[in-house]
Picture 1 (cartoon, rainbow, N blue to C red):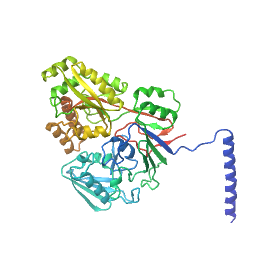
Picture 2 (tube, helix red, strand yellow):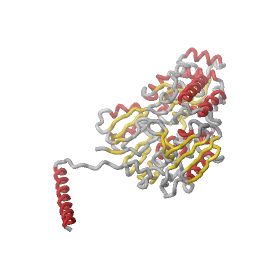
Picture 3 (cartoon, rainbow, N blue to C red):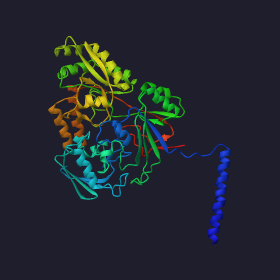
Picture 4 (cartoon, rainbow, N blue to C red):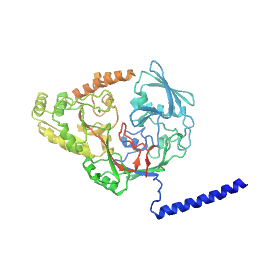
Length: 507
């Protein structure tokens, strides 16, 4: 009793001293404010849905990947594959059996348990005949999915697939629950550190901290996160300066980056991405079914001028569909160097000495419009007339170009890392067919040796650089602008994302 009374008196005295101390600090103007626990991120383009297992738009993953949804593996900020819902795995010596040990005690946001049956459902859904998964090919080598017990998942493959663990970390490979999968497009339910709250179409998506998140080793400090959609570059800058948004992880106007200099609150970051800007051609139709025409157009392009005019000089020229961040990268910009006279001669050799006319379907984004205008002027120098048709992205571009291949030329930034294989897909909007190229990519999957894979990636790059199924232009950097007190956003982007797990405020 004496000890208890002493504790009570001591607590009251301490409380009094604390209150008095805070009052003194407040009177002196030095009260300590608690760090913020909410964040508003700006995005230039609103996703058409929120389920990355049924939609190809990278904006989907930029909202939900690693935030709402999680996969068996994941890709960290350094681009490395690390465990997530699978805590470990064993690969058989022949590369045909993958045995995963799954985390236990993991639940979806609605309380449904995650286990091997859920993982089997997800993978069978992704690889099934009716699958609309944008990366369905990633699962094509899976022969059977077995569930010996709730914590064990066994994948038996038809052939070795050296990239499987990497692919399982992608947004398209996240785990979904049978009860909620059909509604994830508008009300996503995952296992991640944030729960979906609301989506005001045309305005913003709101997420809230998942208090029951399975990974107790992760300390999530944000209670709320909002993704606000602002398409106009001037409006993006104004929102940042006014504090209406805390960050634009992918700021869309390089010409405005200098306007933030001297701002005491905001910082600017220039990082690496996988955003490859290419002018894709329909290789199945005239005149682009003639390799000489494609090569001539490539020689008509001065990449340095394109980068300067389209993205204020902030970009890296590329000669194939590959970035300097990737293993086995080769600088192939000299394969078809800028040479107007040689371009004219090659065009004449292909039977177009009197020129030709075609239309480019260019999305409304600034980089695409500016690049198209610069290309238009360059092509005119070799007698080629290119008309520009602005095509709304994503909906119209996806329906006309990506799905229907109803186009002659287009221009877009491909954001997926290590996606050389898009030129081997059939069908795909390039309509490019080269068995030798496909064979090289097949060999990549047949080996798990990084050195051998890098060598093969080099061979694949050389084939594309020579064939020019697309005009390979430049890699866009990640231009970030955010509040200097906001920490934990990825400065580089090995995969399109806005991972919130480590994002926090400091005072």
